[in-house]
Length: 118
Image 1 (cartoon, rainbow, N blue to C red):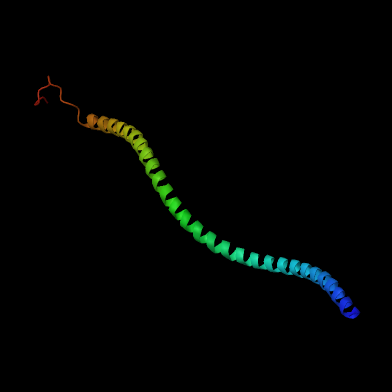
Image 2 (cartoon, rainbow, N blue to C red):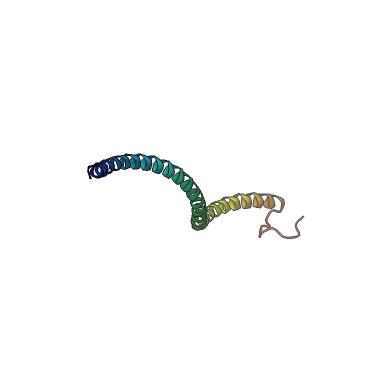
């Protein structure tokens, strides 16, 4: 009886201490190693795949919408302003040069001058 009581107390104390120490150390080491490796691999794979897919889809949609709106507004405003300024300047210069050359070659007929005057 004495031996059984002693063994039960000893084993309960020993096993509780041993198991608590062993399990705490083992679990902390195992979990830290496992989780660090697993999480690093999982996160790297998951994030690379997810981010590449997400970013490609998001950026393609965002850029297509943004660029279409921005370019339509920008080009309409820019082209209207640019073309109006450019055409007004170009046409005024071109017409003044063209008319000066044309009128120097073909002077206008004055109404008081007869057509058959030589």
